[in-house]
View (tube, rainbow, N blue to C red):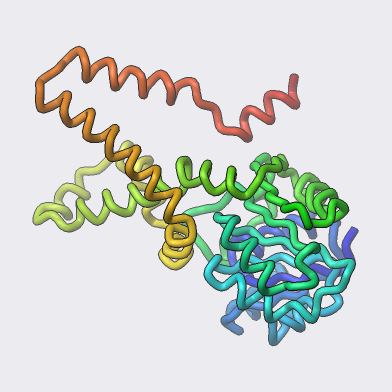
Amino acid sequence: MFEQLGLIGCGLMGGSFALALKRAKLVKRVVGYSKSPSTTERARQLGVIDVAAPSALLAVSGADIVLLAVPVAASEATFKAIRHGISSETLVMDVGSTKGDVIEAARNGLQRQFANFVPAHPIAGKELSGIEHAEASLFAGRQVVLTPVKTTLRSNVQRATQVWSGIGANVVTMTHEEHDGAFAAVSHLPHLLAFAYINGLAAQPQGERFLSLAGPGFRDFSRIAASDPVMWRDVLLANREHVLEQSRAFRKALDDLEALMAANDLQGLELSIAAASKTRAAWKPAADSASQQQDN
């Protein structure tokens, strides 16, 4: 059990982590800080945190586990702000959707305490952000990717694994390069496409009329377009090289489909759709796969 969690960022992810640790009895006390004092106070009122700290440094002072749940672009400034409150025994983690940039930010910001940092990315969330939507079960059955580097203390990687496993997550370890390339393909590009699709639809003269006729297929396809703008601005820019590479691959696939349609190629179009359908039908979420493996 940890004595104190220093929580930087009392939103959906940070708040859910605090609630999960409390429910699992893995922490005795949570001290939280957010840029907005009203958010920190709301987190205290809801029982997500026990003490509202007036600064990030004071939130981590005396903590033996620290979680940064801030926009990735704010990582380096946050690491610098808390550096002098991190002891040699403190486990420091984040929840950012990109890892290469956050690791560099931690290296610059934490300096001598960089070995304490275990980069983490929980594959969980909601369209709705904010402390009001935090829930203790958010990470249960979900994957959490850890991307330690050579200088990361092995003992802290083990502690991080135990923490996430203790709140019901399935922990996977990979390099930050592998992580950023993979999630550009399966997370960041889909968000980019959803944003572009909604903007393209809304910009048409009959956009509102089209939206009024939309059904479940539209709902499922467009759901992630309602995601937090600031968070996704930072993610797309931080991982832009990988995302642009995936965007080019998508554009080629779309061009190929459009060419089949323009040529009225019934067989070719059907084969292309069938290939996509087969791939999608065979896919199972990683959490489901892990659950099946445990059951077996």
